[in-house]
Length: 438
Ligand code: SF4
Image 1: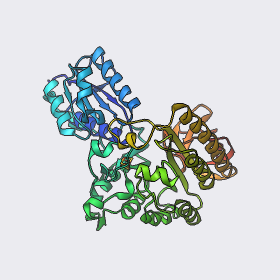
Image 2 (image 1 turned 120 degrees about the vertical axis):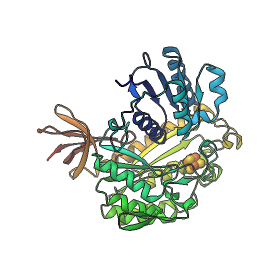
Image 3 (image 1 turned 90 degrees about the horizontal axis):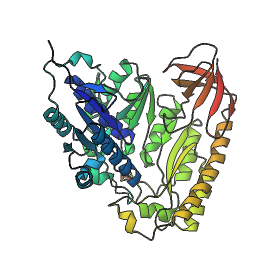
Image 4 (image 1 turned 45 degrees about the vertical axis):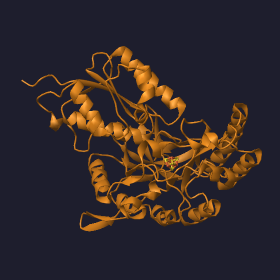
């Protein structure tokens, strides 16, 4: 008889990139016969995949570790916060092991030591596409690790190192497996998607009957041909990004670009050392929309960056009104330990940060409402995330899961998760659309 499989409780914190790491670890563990359990109590071991990007994320990570220690006591910590183990060791000396991001081997080694695998590995329990923590109809596809940029507010390159891209064929094989397993939407992620392949010198790798170069355009095109929705995240406005816009106009890749602009004022962008900050962005956006009128642009911004003046902030608001971005998130600047930005200039006082944040959000809400109004009356495809008795929740091609808006779909027939249905849009509000399945 097979031994009982050790049970692992897994906590995954942080960004989509960390989620992909969690999925990899879990897939390995499942392949070795480990079981997952939802509660810390009764588990043989708890793994906490931490995020250490902002102080608030660190606090959340420490709280999760504390909770696991209290409820279970056998805890392995991995992820971004694991790159600096001092703080964790100081607070929780009893933690079994601490490993940094992407140190899959070390995590697995620590697990083997603390809870050796059962003798009879249930390899066939692992679905061929691996274990996904996202719902089955969409999946994150990580195309590279690390980052060659050195934005002054960010410690990710310190934590994760320089850019390391996956060969194109490797990414495409994973994407194909996901699509075969029923995934309808691929979310391409990395720290800097448009830099993809630079470290590989864009080397080609064999895929089907051809060689595919590790280039942003080539990869996007091949992914688009797999038949699922392909959404591009974390793209910087380098000149070569212009090439993918026709792929969007042709319907091969979703008409969606997630570009974390972070600011618009030249002074602030320079102080942030943002990639591609000298490109004439407003002009580029105009041209992109000429080529692909349906293009949705989503972005994130930081207000209250050290040294941000009133003029800088007014510049940002004016830029925002002009750029008319579709989806926007905004953060108040938070000092990250070890980030050079902290020493650039005097911090902006919290009340002023708050005031700027509110003005920013108000300005963008008006832009967003205006953009969404133009969709009323159209018939658009919507992917269903959550079925409902009479109204289902879904997303348009212009909305990524978790971060963007929703489309609320009234339907007489039952809709299932992952269905892509045509919806007639009847009304809009600040962030969402409402319509009826036709
Ligand atoms: S692009 Fe900048 S913000 Fe993004 S990971 Fe690289 S250094 Fe950090």
